[in-house]
Structures are given as C-alpha cells and as structure tokens.
Amino acid sequence: MPCTPNAVLTPRDLREQIRSGGFAGPTAGMGGDALQANIVILPGAEAADFLRFCQSNPRPCPLLAVGAPGDPALPSLGEGIDLRHDVPRYRVWRHGELTDEPSQIADLWQDDMVSFALGCSFSFEDALTRAGIPVRHQDAGRNVPMYRTSLATRPAGRFGGPVVVSLRPMPAADAIEAVQICARMPLAHGAPIHLGDPAQIGIADVMAPDYGDAPDIRPGDIPVFWACGVTPQAAIVSGRPALAITHAPGHMLVTDIPASRAEARLTGVNA
Amino acid sequence: MPCTPNAVLTPRDLREQIRSGGFAGPTAGMGGDALQANIVILPGAEAADFLRFCQSNPRPCPLLAVGAPGDPALPSLGEGIDLRHDVPRYRVWRHGELTDEPSQIADLWQDDMVSFALGCSFSFEDALTRAGIPVRHQDAGRNVPMYRTSLATRPAGRFGGPVVVSLRPMPAADAIEAVQICARMPLAHGAPIHLGDPAQIGIADVMAPDYGDAPDIRPGDIPVFWACGVTPQAAIVSGRPALAITHAPGHMLVTDIPASRAEARLTGVNA
Image (cartoon, rainbow over all chains, first blue to last red; front, side, top):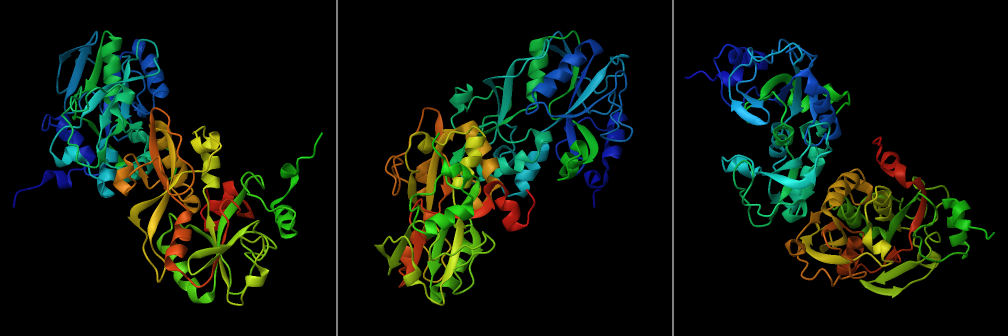
C-alpha cells in the first residue's frame, strides 16, 4: 500500500518539507482543512500604502496577518513560519514586471521587508462544496475564470486599479445560499459582489476571462462574481514598486489555522 | 398644530380603537415598529392539517403564534388581543369562496376555533428601506406584484397548491445585501427563494402578476422573488374548507412585539 503523505502531514510538517526543498508544487488540497493564504512582501517604503490599500478594499484583499518590519514570521498564523522559505513558489516583481519565480527568497530579504497574508477562495469553495453547491471549474478540472472589471479599488498611494473578480456559475437557489454562506466568511472574500448581467461590471464576454480558464456554464445557471485575490497582484503591476514579492498562483502559504475556525480565531468573533 | 395619532398610539391603543369601531383601514405604517401579522382562523377539524401545512412550508407560512382551541387570545403577541374584533377587516371564506368582508367576527366564532398568526413582509421591507435598498412598489405607491409559481407547497391534508411569490426588482448589489438581511428574518419569509429568470419558476410574463400591481422595473434591476403570505390564502381557496376566516389584504393584526426584536423574542435566538 503506497504511503499517502497528504493525509498525515500537519501544516507545520508540510512547511518544513517546502522549506527543505522537498515540495514545490501547488497547495490545493494540501494540509487538510488548514487555511491557506495569498502572500505579498514589500519593502518598508511601500508597505504602509499597501496596508492602507488592503484595509480600504477588504473584499478583494482580506488581511489575515501583517508581519513586523524585517521579521519573516507570522506567529498568529502558525508556529515557526519563515516567509523566506515556506511558500512553495514565489514571484518576484520589479517595477511591475515579473522577473523570476524562485522557490525561496532568502537572498532578496531586506531588514525592512513587511509581509502580508491575505485570505483566499479555497476556504469558501470548500464551504460551498460541503453545502452541495456546484463549483463548476473544480468539477471540470479547470482554473477559476477571472476578469478585470469596471469597478475601481479605493486607491492608496501608488496602489489602485480595477477590482478583479472570479466567476462561479450556479443555479439561482444555490446563489442565494452561497451569499449567506460566504457572507459569514469575510476573510475568504465574503459575499459575492455581483450576480447576473456581466456587462454591468464591465465584462464584455464572460467566455473570455482575463485570467484562468473559460467558465463551464450550465443551462439555468446565473453568473455569480466574487472579489478576487488577483486584485492585489494587479495593484502591484499597476503601482510598479521597485521590488515586490508574491506567492506564485496556486502556491500558497499553508497556515496552522483550521479554515473552518479562521473567522473566529482571527477576528475575535465567535462563529 | 394637528394632532398626529399614529405617532402616539401604542399597538394596544390601536387595537382598542379597532375593536371599538374607530378604525377599520389598512395597517401599513400604523403602530410604529410593531410587528404586524397575517391571520388565519379555522375550525378545529381543519386546524391540525393547517398547522402541519405551515410547519412544512415555513418560507411562505412563517408561524408567529397559534391560539389555543376556542381562545381568541394570542398572549405571546400582545396583552389583551381578542381576534374576534382586533383585526380591522376580515375575509370570510366558505368552501373556498370569499363570502364576506366584515369588521368583526364575534358571531362566527366557535368553541373549537384555532387562530394562526403568520409573519408578513412589512418587517423585511422596513429593513430593506433602512439599508437604503429600493422597494420600488412602495416608491411608486403601488401594491407589491405577486405570482403563482410552478413550485409546489408540501401538502398537508386538504391544504396544498402552488407557492405564491412577491417580486421586488432591484440592482444586483442590493439583491446580494437583501439576501443577507432577509436571511436573518425567517419570521418575515426569510431569504428570497429565487432571483433572475422568472420563467425558471413558471412565471411567463412578469408584467402580468396574478395579484397586486404590475412591477416597476428599472434599467439594471434584476427580479428578486420572496415566498409570499398569499400562499396560505391560496391553500385555503384550493382546500375548500367549509369555513375559514382570514384578515383582508393589508388589514393586519398589529402586535406588541417590536419588529426589530421579533426574531429574538419569538424564536429564542438572540439577534
């Protein structure tokens, strides 16, 4: 019988395997119920504006944790986290251009680096699946379709640009239930921000997403749109800071927080 | 300065005025924040089935209170309520046919009469208005449009028939917020049961409602449908009991319960 490491690896074991170079792949389905996070790392000069950008745009940029300047730990999200190594793949951006995709960033770390952990959609997709609501791109083995919209983020310093949304088509009754489920998960982008006519938020052709794969829309489905974690990456591209580091798409930080308890643990509100 | 009786009348004073024949009009806007209720009164032989019908169909028929057989009081909804007099106008149904619209029913009361108080849409429309969400039929001074759907109630004995829905058109972002607001108000019909394409629930022409006035649909609105308190009246018409008494449309029982505290007070769940 082959060993099944995913079933036994704790999030901390998984991070240690990543740190030692033993794993560098996408983290979807890894770490069991552990909350996963989008990561952005910026030099001190840009960090204050980016923090303000996240706080002003909580739907696309739900802040899970912010590191102390120069400190690669995020103790509220897990013991021993070291952001110089613990993300399986990073993206390095210089003046808004993608320049590298390394598996560690120890050589780029600076004394004033500030790290940001942002909520991601994995948690709410799990909650939808548990409720019996179809997540069509998962069923089809595709990436979620994402679109730049005509909705603007609230800018902060150099950071701004459009709200990017992800699309999950589903029947109307499921959309009504999904609003209720996701409204209780503000750290995972919260309730949808639009449903129905895509043109109302500046999407001309729903079959031609700006990121990800084309949607699988079944008869009777309506399009339901969530604010998306690609929004902060788009803000970095448009803001063109001298240096920024993010996770590579799908290659997330795996935290110690059970996703089902994240809202209670990280906001102090009992679920 | 003219006196403004609505501003000073307590619900109990208002009921006494109704009982004495001093007021027999519609109750919209009366009694301040007091919860208003749909009323159904049935002889004992029909009451058990109707109770089961309501419990099986809580979205269209949210039960606020059920009277003891033969007792015209509803003590959980207000001190001194006497259902033989305290509704400003009644409807009398014999074998499913509307036969009279009296202002009191003392002469029809029987020793085995059971009264049912059901939640109504006034509470959630107030909540939507407070949230800045348009309630178009109110703004247009019209009655809410209502439709028989292809959705069936769960039948109980002689009571059954279609779910009747009310329509409130609004922008998609408001619909998303309305789902969240109304989901917290199960005693006022709860979350919408459909949005988007009316044909999916058997409504061929949204401009031709089965009850009420034609909708006022603005550019960018989507149709949002709630289960409606007309559903139990339709069940009485189709069930054809020998005798049934209801309130006349818009002429409700005004209770002592503040609408904003109804869910907590009547369900034991703290809001």
